[in-house]
Amino acid sequence: MSRGPGPNSALLTITVVSPSHAIVGGAPGGLGYLAEMLEAGDLRDELSLRQQPDGWLSPSLTRLRRRYRGRLRIRWVNPYSLLGLYLAIRFHIRRYPTIMLDTEVFDSVGGAAEFEELVAARLAAPWI
Image (cartoon, rainbow, N blue to C red; front, side, top):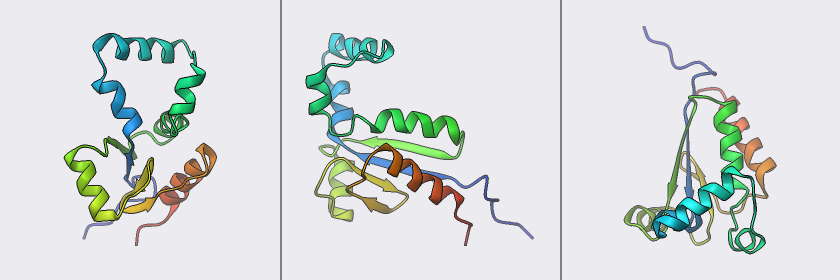
């Protein structure tokens, strides 16, 4: 007889559908390197912050990864890719960034605190 996973072993898939994270990957090599150096030095460019509506999301995901080691699977999806198109059609996604916890879609999350509470509540829920 097998038992289901315990409350500490639940795995949650977080899918972020957003163009801003994918932009750096498509930029020329020097710009990607510069972005990494600015991030490592904790330096912020005001214009870049205003142009990135999900700037709070990356630090929040880093905190969640540390807090729930091995319990989160995180994937960023460029909405202009084939997978992004599929997700937009399948889940009727019309705004970016859109966050999916497993298959539940959240197209407007109030910020890092609300998002982290959603993830904590989802991981604390018992297996059914």
